[in-house]
Length: 112
Image (cartoon, rainbow, N blue to C red; front, side):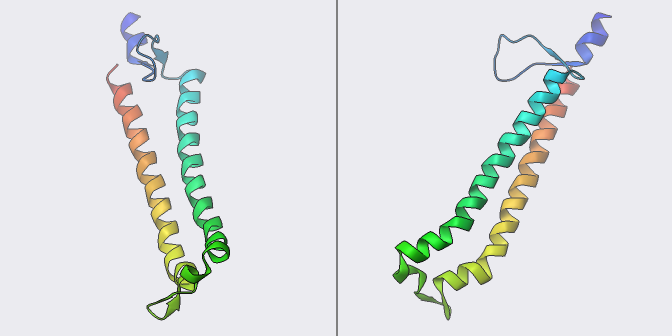
């Protein structure tokens, strides 16, 4: 029975003296969900800063927002051209980091 217990456990990486958790336990699920939530909130904050930053730049830095760049004003260049690639970049970063998180958890789970 000892071998089966060790196969289905995983160490919690945040504290070195923590006892191993069962792979199918609620604690382990909560750990994964917490890490996913932290990643989601961090990238959501980046998106909100980008989204709310444009009106603030228009208000506080009108000379920068109205500067001509490639025939567009700065605000229209950002809003019409750069906004979608930035959104895709945030989405790509989320998917990449989420998959890395899943692979790291699966790799640690396979050790036991």
